[in-house]
Length: 583
Image (tube, rainbow, N blue to C red; front, side):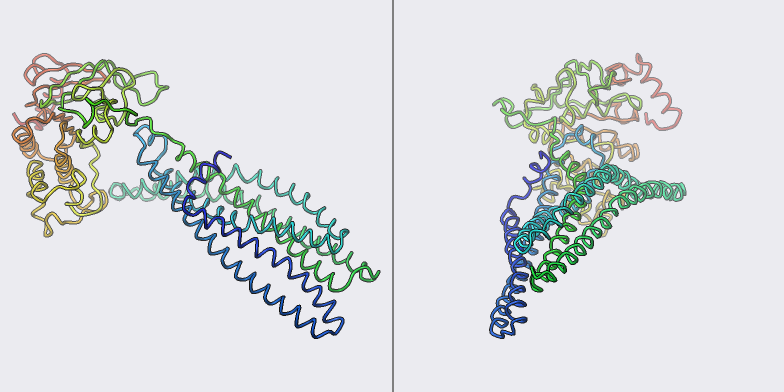
């Protein structure tokens, strides 16, 4: 019931259409039930009696009822289609908006492929079920009840035949649906895996082709696809029992009604017109039962989808802006000073080991900080706590002298520009991508930011310059160009804190040095945190942090660490031997 209540919140402006559809269905059903009664009069009072006046009168009423029924059916179909499509639109929007509010930890609970499946396949299943519910699920029970009452009015003994069929049919359908639902739940989870395989393949298609791994990827796809086929086939085999069951009820009921009705006509207690009317009602009754079985099948499929959609809508971000923001915190951080006060962090509450352990660090505003360490040392995790992409498990992170949890999230993140390890560009022109940093940036501001990021030169080499179109993911520019565009985009925010998470790894050392020099000269008051694998990228920093296994191993200048820290010495000497270091 909670699932239904949650999903119904997405109907909103389509409530009127959702009410009009069953209303017109009701009119349609009432008229369809009246039509056989009119046929009784037409046959008994008109045709059998040879009364042309009665034939014309009843026939005229019959035609009008048919036309009105047709109009009501068309209107109910129109409103049902409009309501279900609008409901699906709102549901997708609500889910998408919910995902936009998720923190990184919330997103970690759902795979990308799973979210895509829920936004597409699952919503479509719910849309189809909703359309059937507001139209067919209203029509079938009403038709069943009204037709039963009409048959009872004509002959109660024949009505008992259909009353006896209904419970037998209901038990059979219940057994069928109970067997199919768990399989559908499993199928939609497998759909998530299928989408994941496809997305991974398309995203890494260049690597796949470079390593000639197409057969391996095809095998992965076939394996998941075969599992979906197997589960769906099993579910459909179970559901297929519903149709023979319905046909048995339909034809068995009609044969019984015909045989019993014929006996009554011979005995003189029923007219020919009444028998024809009963036959019409029997078709309506049993057709209604068949439609109800289809609705039950659709609900069985959509129930699993509804539960998956509800899980997304019910998910609440564990990182939100405070309910009340102190006057001192209004407007975001006043400067770029950063403090880690005995901070520990774990991505999972159940994890026994912390990714970061007892980090105690104080960074003055405007300083340049280098962060170096091996893979898995916790460098990226450390800087992600600054804009509250994650919250510290223990301890406090402060920016501008205040706990980051005291700031409005938007104001905090506007003050912190971050270029992540995975440089992401979106489909659109270079200008459109740069304006992610500042939607109101002028051409002059964009050019200045690109000059600082050493991107202006290669942009102007393109025929369309800053209007060059960037493909999705930036696949039509090199890795180094992508990194420099992302740095320029971050600079357009005019941040108080600039974080570069290994963001110059794809550029040569000369360009790297030019970028650092531009930072020193052009944004001296911005606190700059540079995570790098190359010592050359951080050697001129005011302070270098050496991390190891989630802890700070040492802090100092290039000269201090070169003289006293073993990890820094090993990195330095390995790069010197490899020729990756410029003195």
